[in-house]
Length: 247
Image (cartoon, rainbow, N blue to C red; front, side, top):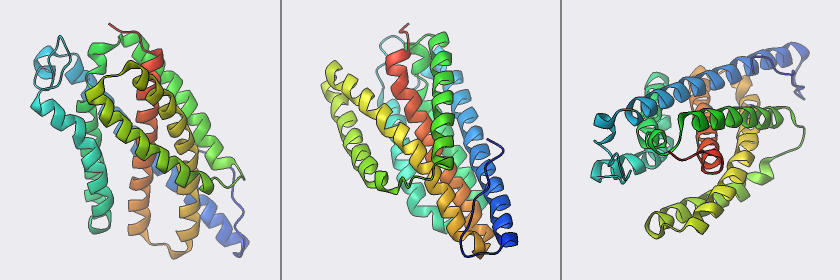
């Protein structure tokens, strides 16, 4: 996604519009670059822990996959960290925010390590490839479409809150029917969020580009990377429930 169609910005001269186009390409490349590093970090940590019984047993029983106390902490830590990140972002420097993002990606890797015990490596790789293709298509649509997707935002966020509540409830109910419904709804919600977040990142940059606030632009790229990172991870995890072959 290194090249993008140029935008047409009303109310600014041709030279200013060209500068915004160039800046937007650099901004989106930075967003996807940060997201990619986060994905590599998550995958590396998840694989290292998930393929080592000694490391995995620190968090879960290698046979039953049931989490211990530390495993429960790791399971909920990403949710707590993402809310903390949103609250702290304005008080962090760009370098500190980027470090926090990478720390978050590593913790997410710990929470996902169990998939290497539960699913075959081939099915994980196949699901990742399918997710990557779907994500790229949805993100490209969000970037290029002239349709305003802002109306989807409230609906998708309400659905996401309901999904999180249902997932927490199902931890204790362990209902297979509810788990299936959660997976279906999760795929739909994060497919929509991928397109919506991409368009939102683009539009937010265009709205603020003339201010040329490098501090803001740096933090905006990190927040955008986090949003798309979460869309990809969740889309992958929900698709894995359908496509993954159990060990």
